[in-house]
Amino acid sequence: MTELTIPYHFTPRSYQEPIFEAIDNWVKRIIMVRHRRAWKDKACFNIIVKKAMENIWIYYYVFPTYSQGKKAAWDGIDKDGWRTINHIPQEIIKRKNDTEMKVELINWSIIQIIWSDNVDSIVWTNPIGIVFSEYSLQSPAVWDFLRPILAENGWWAIFNFTPRWDNHAKELLDMAKENPDWMVSIQTVDDTKAITPEVLESERREIIQKNGTDAIFQQEYYCSFDAWINGSYYAEILTELEKAWRITTLPYDPALDVFTVWDLGINDSTAITFWQRFWKEIRVIDYYEMNWEWLSHYVSILKEKPYRYGTMRLPHDAQARSLQTWKTVEEKLYEYGFNDIQIVPKLSVLDWINSVRAVLQYCWFDKEKTERLRKCLKNYHKELDEKRQTFKWPEHDWSSHGADSFRYLAVVNELYDWTSQKGKIIESRS
Image (cartoon, one colour):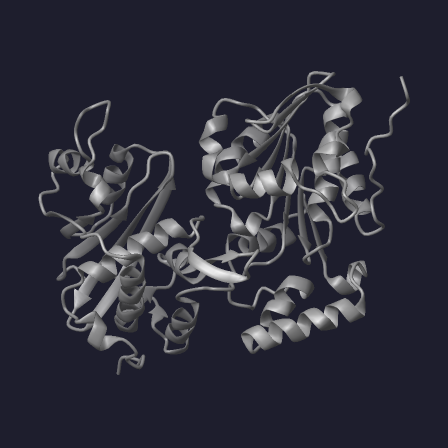
């Protein structure tokens, strides 16, 4: 047999070598913040192949969605015509499953491409190496799900991403900077020299022409966290609320009912927004989101809080019957003692979005308890059709659950005529 060198058909660039060295030296947690086109996935994929040959076990490469994993890793081809999956040489492959995007090696190690919106499919598995690709676009719940596994077995995880505004990836980065057990590597295009100045300038001019600012250029090539996510529906309004001091300490008023709006999920996130109404003010006082929990869990969360509840609003799928109990979520909540329940009417996507934009003009948010909700709203964005370079409908990602919960709040609020209130100037409370 011809002697093989792993990594196969890949030589790390000088700026990638410290990551390979860190993994070889048993650094257990690594954050790689990289500019666009820095070969971060190519490097990380080769790390996984190398470690899978050195230590027999299961390794996961996690992408935000199935299509991204298939496009970037399973079917991906670089500018030289080399397929990413071919960095696993045929000589070390025992079998390959295209449907599951899984490769079993001759030493019994397994490398599998998975996606964070289907992470429950790997329940009861025990990986010892995980790469999170574009973690800023993934649901933060996926790390909450996999972290205990790595904590127990004592192995490693790499998070690579290009910044996407100030979201959970930035939170993880800030934590890691203060934690000696984590390695943080941030490299802009000036650090890697991976793109020529001529190409960079061309990119900068094109982005400015399209967006009127170079904020996206700074995000994509200089790892800035200050740019709004491209195609965000509500980021500008939330920023105006911050300027107007409308995000503050907002205590529960026991004289007012607390209304809740739910976005339901079982194998996905369930999000609950808590709010009170006082004249023209909508006070968003609390928010809760969790994955893979039964209805009883959320009921216990509600009952633990000191709130006096008013109407509970549920989406239309709350009227779907469970195959296990043949009861709807609505019926189960009645059994738990919640008697004031309404189903939110279905509207078009555009009507939903316009309702949220209108109602945000009247909102106040508790700074601490609604931080996750506000990040969902800021990051909720249009999906980009990369082929046509045009925006499509809202992209379903980690931010969708909180945003969907809030859109139910907007639609069911009966104090305002949304169409006539659009564009109202945000004012601070005197």
